[in-house]
Image 1 (spheres, helix red, strand yellow):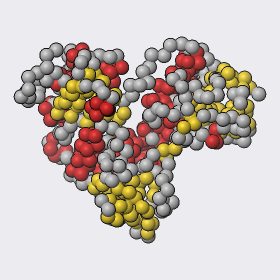
Image 2 (cartoon, helix red, strand yellow):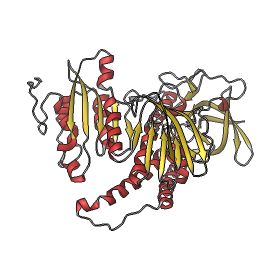
Image 3 (spheres, helix red, strand yellow):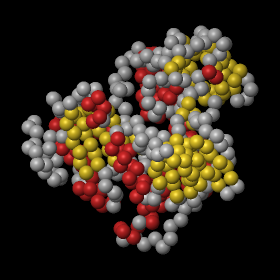
Image 4 (tube, helix red, strand yellow):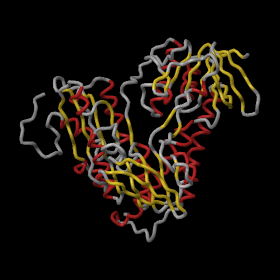
Length: 473
């Protein structure tokens, strides 16, 4: 039996950040990981996906280079090189994380962990040895994995999850994406830019159903413009695996239809494995397959915390896991944590990029909040025109009575970089007037944020005037 102050199970973006925060606060920490440091996000998710998307963006730009006075006789894609580049990026970042852990004196144990009453953490190490840690506190940060829906034929050789797509980065002429959420539309966007014939099948009425309606509708139009077929309200019935491809059978508008493709990506959600974590005698309260936690990330078992995808109630996002890791360790150390876990930006790295934070206009109205909305079309933004980007927008939602910003939605160039400014405004309770008062550099995409904030009051300088009188401040 080895005594430890803190044991963190899982070295993804939640677990390794929790361990680093513990080291900063003077808490000795052991970090247990059964696979690679960095978890799904770094090794099979966020980072390699964005590397592939960046390669696709460069190829798309190369095909249109003549518009900018650059002659490229013939651009082509080397998919093995795209894969190698993604893995090189992953390796560099993973090495950096491991160096940080070592520099902070964090013990890294590689093996499979189970948690027993005590709390105890029993680890079956990769070398076959077993170690048992008696911990004052335990943080569970084991993440999630792709989930396959109960559809016949998904065990075929041409059917992949996001894990398989990123390990192979296959060269395919046609791709069917089952699921129009974030993962699905990102891969659809990448392969559309690579020149594949892409079909997206989404069971709900629009793409990105958890985000503002206009974002999903606008992205669908952008994908269609680039040659994608987007079918919503589409229920997949089965997949037939044939020698020269796979056929997806789905129902839409009362008709049964078929689409053939070289490969099928299933992107319908993720699941957590709580059962394998718990040794006999330990029962963690769960809700829909995730561990129930309170406001300080404490589970139903004393001194056991859960963060990231496996914690119920939170968004399954890497930056949420990291923030929760800091919050949980701060609670353990009994020190204040000023991170606002309620103000979380969501990002989609499609082409065009999408980001959202806080309330949409519809959500505000459902909550009984009267709002004013400022919207700026990025066709008037100089950097957007210079970059030759398609039509986009930035939308700001503010309370009507006091002008406090409560939400923002962006579909434009560098949307995922711009959203942080608006997240800060929401987290700090700033009014649109206060947030708009900052002078923004020209020409930048960020100018669009200022214009959208000014538009809340009908005062955006670079927008056509409206017939109604501007709202007085």
